[in-house]
Length: 273
Image 1 (tube, rainbow, N blue to C red):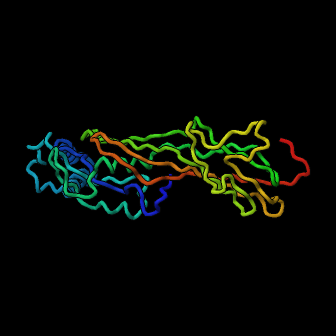
Image 2: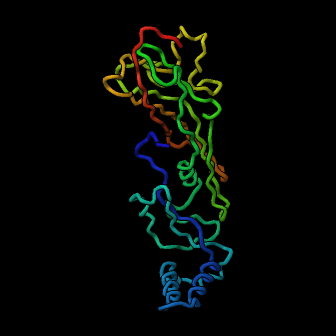
Image 3: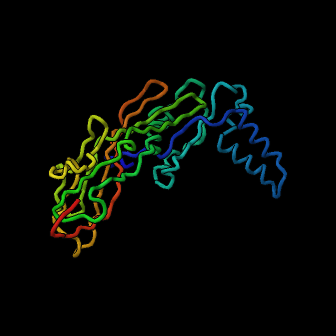
């Protein structure tokens, strides 16, 4: 899924509650007791103490066990190689239960929804064409999508430790046809086939429609014997919205997802479907 707004991306990183005092204490004390060469266990234990700034807390903050957690930076695996993934460079910090940290990148229902955006299970844009295979100059090609496959899809992201979840839903709204050459006419003229009331995009061809122009399709005007196949691109536009367990929700940037099909166009004197 590619957002139409090129300036928007799902979050590259955020902060979320991950470690309880009991977990932290158990990890560090376990490392300190670990047998091994060159004192590697105690070395890692000291690293943990430095990262979690344990000198600020008495006994790893055990007096607040069950009353909050240490929040840590989490990187979105889909964007881990991007520079923005390094922006969450704050050391782990303590947050009492029920409080929201003064941190713009602290996890929220909207951040969960934006993360779920990347996980939406949108189908490949596999169009059906009639005629199928090789096309013919000046013969209308009907194009449509399988209505059973192109329906709203959702993805949910959750953080059970604080009981927060968000569901992001993508709804298909149109199919855009780009024939891959200027020597073609698209139907409709805009090249955008809107979704019908019954959820269909484009109309399947049948013999009783042979004298009709396709509501969604393309007519190639020149053969490809001199140019090679035309890269016909079919792109579905999806409207994105979200809801959450805390009652928040709204819209996210419209997304697009498409595939390209190589189309060979020939010339014949007589045409039979």
